[in-house]
Length: 477
Image (cartoon, rainbow, N blue to C red):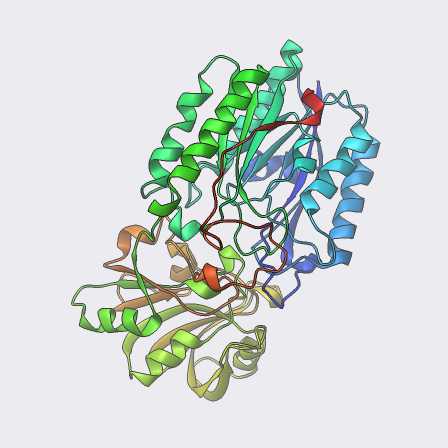
């Protein structure tokens, strides 16, 4: 059996002014794809895997049209060279927005379907924060999505999709997909699977899997910072029995809709100044403060200096901000030297709505892995240590800080650009605070511009009734 493997994976805030380019993606090709950690499970007796192209980027603004076209063309060229194949596995995200193009995943998957033909089963894996459309559903035979947020089951989800595909090819069975849209959009920070009611809703999914006629049950929260028609929550179920699959999709959709008023932020949350008041009064450490509106893993720009400005106004001592994306500031530090002090402008380079800070900064450490885009600088501004990065990136892994000579557990206050905290940072937070800061992934979603979303949709609209109605893939009718 020959299974081709590829895909494109990122998440795009339509409110961001920063387009993503080819350089923002990590691209895996050929044997490098098969050796990558996320794909190392692609090993089964009597299965030949044909690696195509997989492009993945830290979430951000819309993907530039030339970048998307280039990736798609290379993927399709490889796919055309690979056919005939027995199956196609696509590792997707589901929340890509391409500049000037709606429903990019549907465009990508439909193009793949045109190449492989109607007889080839297509399996996809998705992030639970992806957005789904009927056009996507109509192209696929197998669907699996993450069941955890924070995401700790990425590889497990990919294995689920791939395993179903291998089983289908070995048995000759032909499963299908049903989905039930839910007019409901909430941020991941209100729907973490570590908190109720999401914890219970996702805990039920494996139980649904064992029902007769059901292969894989999924609840998609969707991506709220995409102002586009397809943005919605939904249930997506892969099954072998149409009636059972439709019923399961409607059941999952109804359970999510019925819980809509119960979702809350999991951590102590409030305006920036209120969170800093709590931090000042705390006697424990490290206090971990999430700068949620500029979270790069949610699509934020990652260059806002609002928190730095607020801490300087309070003359805060013993804080670590990790980090602020500012390539010119990093280059200025490298033009100087470690130990020197220079007048530095920090932040507001990419998002013009964000305030910049101008201050005397002492260069504590310079980190040069080799590529200009990977450079980092650690500077001291008053009593605050700031990590500056040449590119947009998160600092959610403790090792990323330790390699810079920083100990996040030793500081009084650690500020990270994040929503809910990563699995590494959450256990050390004492306490965990989330500031509802400004940015292109602002948590005050009811105030987001909503010009293209289908309406009504909760919580943008509240006075309407809804009953789920599941739909089959066109390939299963």
